[in-house]
Image 1 (spheres, rainbow, N blue to C red):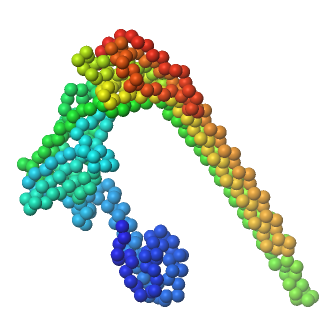
Image 2: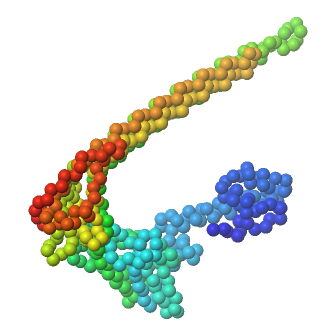
Image 3: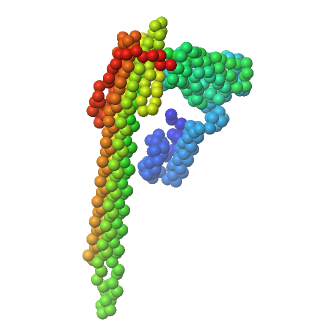
Length: 395
């Protein structure tokens, strides 16, 4: 966004847009060259532009910092509703990064809240954030049931389907300063989406970089000789001192090893003869994850990949030898140090193992499962073991 006051005429014969861009990017030498030869007036304009740009940057930083809502309201960039004639509100959810409406959430998924306020004078005021309006979310009080909402308007469904199964989530909204202006939003639960059960090992940490070698100190200059007592001419110049040697760079440390993928067990069954939903449980590494899957669009991918080995740290820079001192002859330069050696990468984590128990009633839906268990270097692990056997109710 361009600010006209950055580019106003100063009668300096300079391309002010280019000048302002130089100032914003802090290329002050180039800005000085742009104004070279234009006199004291343009010199003062340079500093005026710099002050304005600095003020704009500070104001923008303040607006985006946490707790600056009051300043945004003061500047007219945001609005609160407590003193406006609000008559009604409505609420909806949209997908993250778009205006696509959302009416149902899958376990572990989230959407963004948009509230529209209608006023007595016919205006519609929309919330900031996903709604791209100016109304602050602190104009409302939220009472969620089943779902959770954060300070940025992110509405999320619990990841565990045992919490939400058979329920409708609701969000009650009160308007601050208007106790009679309320809205209720209902959010259904859906299970026809791709789910991921990730039991992969963590990647190794990166090694520490080596320290840089210190630069050698410069050699001392020759001390002038006293004049010749007979001729009065200056005596011969002495030799310059040798520069100090640069220090060696430190070696980088080795990267950490990737963690292995977990030994994972998957259970799959139909929830009931009358229900089209699939129950799934995935256990491994001390964790249990649960899923409800709608076969009309839902899938489950289970990963037990090994973590990649961490990169080795970089060797430190070699110190430069110090310059020889002035003299006759001049002093020799110091020797450069040796750069440090790079650390070795960590070992990749081993692939995990996957065992699958599928109830006979769920066998027609086996194709909805997908697996990945490879080592941290990409080598495939053992093929998943699939057993068709009775699986009791998982919850």
